[in-house]
Length: 440
Image (cartoon, rainbow, N blue to C red; front, side, top):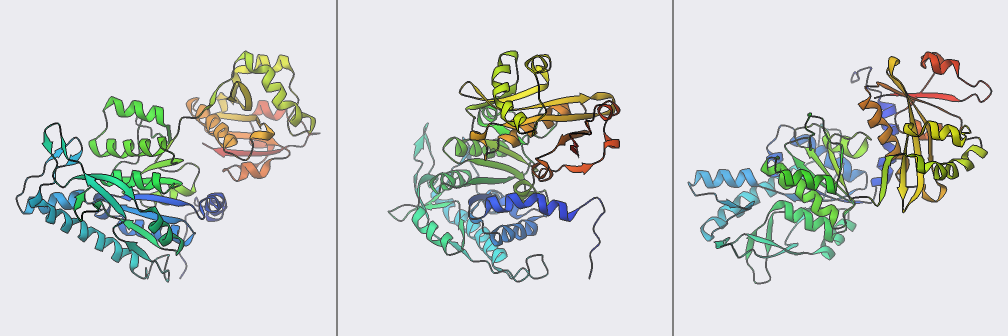
């Protein structure tokens, strides 16, 4: 049976553009927090299929399970009080078995979903191995500000050796929000804390948290696709988020500040959100990065000397068009730069053609000693953000040597006739540059 695909969806291009991420993620360890709310959402089966796909791509998965609504429901049915203080659920002795029951039911549901053959799905025939156990060592939270938290605990350590052995044997590992003490006691833990400590102690490459919201939004309703931890902390300090979103963002910030390279907030209500976030440049949630000691900023006149030193070797090779100091000084407000320890290590420029809602990306350059990282990506993202702020709908560029890099990032080859009229008149036929464009 053939499935019709909308014309606007170019599967081949999408797959090609996702291939760098597939390669980059293979063999990496991701800790993914699945709250109890996600398990009850309409797209939960899709999340299971996406986890199976990640596993098939060689990504090592540690899943952390929450059970907040399930616990609330079982306590409500038994007409027992549900008390939360400072984001911790108070767990008296007479509620511990109910909480264990709710957690166990969620764990069994997850294991059952992950263990099935996935027939009639894109992952038909895939075999998934899921392991869970007493891998979280806990201690009591105790009495805080006069409140006895009972069997509420905090993570003491994660049994990383046992988890690594399971991951090496191609298992998914499932960690519940319950921890166990060396004295045989059971403690109810915050699932966010389990996820944080698992990501830190396993030296995970990513922490991914499913939440109700798509991510963190600006005041105008636009989604932050990326936040530095210092900016995320300012949002946390403002205390404008819902308690659940606040806890999720705080978990991301804590993890990144303690060595996890990146954390992601995505919505469990977004079908395919996990794949979009991990395998597309735009993503669909909010990614949290550590504060960078490299500053991306608008260029100023004092940068011209460093920019000339950066651009000269590329101009000698004919990769870039020559620019005089005078021209750079006159056009300095068109440029952004990356500065590292006082040196300019990368730059790019945007020349807007506002009447035609188009902008030219030009002079994107990274110093040879600083290539192989994401500095080119950061420059491109910065230029795209500036273009959007100017209400430009198309970004174009002319290149002779770097076409594939731009194709991998969503640009398509176009013709001279599609350029702004003013740019057409300036085209250098002797240089014979190829032309690429991208819709913003």
